[in-house]
Length: 137
Image 1 (cartoon, helix red, strand yellow):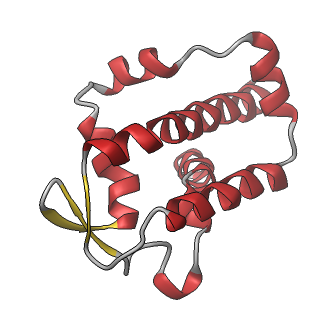
Image 2 (image 1 turned 90 degrees about the vertical axis):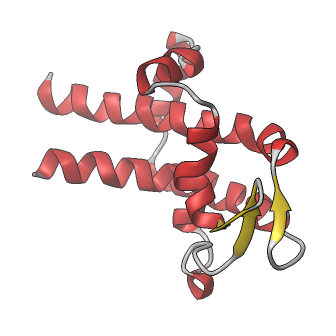
């Protein structure tokens, strides 16, 4: 149970909208169109951008796992406050990309944000691995 909670928390810290604006519930109240289908900004970042890559979880992990040992060490040694702050800064970019209600998003949005999404997934995974390695040796 605690392990599942830890995994969830580390994942949440790295998703920019999870440290987004309280008043819109982290993007849940910002309505957008994803390839013509109604959704909200939070769901777009939690699910739809990842699903759009059309990869299995294993394929996706392999496609983004290109960090060096030095990067892994640096990311794992950073204090958790930095993890929050990174996501907070990126949340500003995500929010800033939405300029109108029900904005239509598609290929261009994916192109503009896929590197950020992949970077957050990679850092979250590497940092989680560091915590698990320290707990379980």
